[in-house]
Length: 67
View 1 (spheres, rainbow, N blue to C red):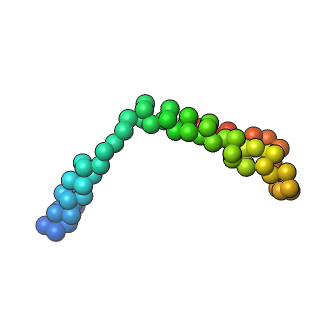
View 2: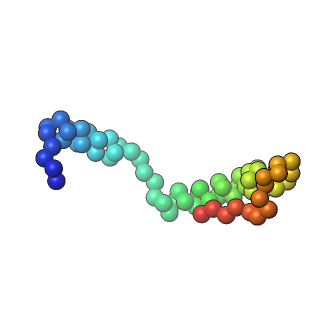
View 3: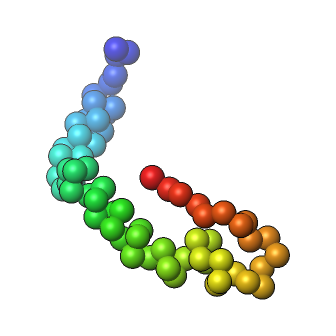
């Protein structure tokens, strides 16, 4: 590792301390919630619901699949 002066090391330590304060959630909890939210919003999404874009000539005929 390169040699860092004291001010750079203090910034690094402060950054790490801030990162430790951030509340994190497990992917096993957040991903299913995200998928559920996406599925709930699909009917309102004009890119996924062709009926909402009848007047748009650039609408693709297929559905978009994410995740």
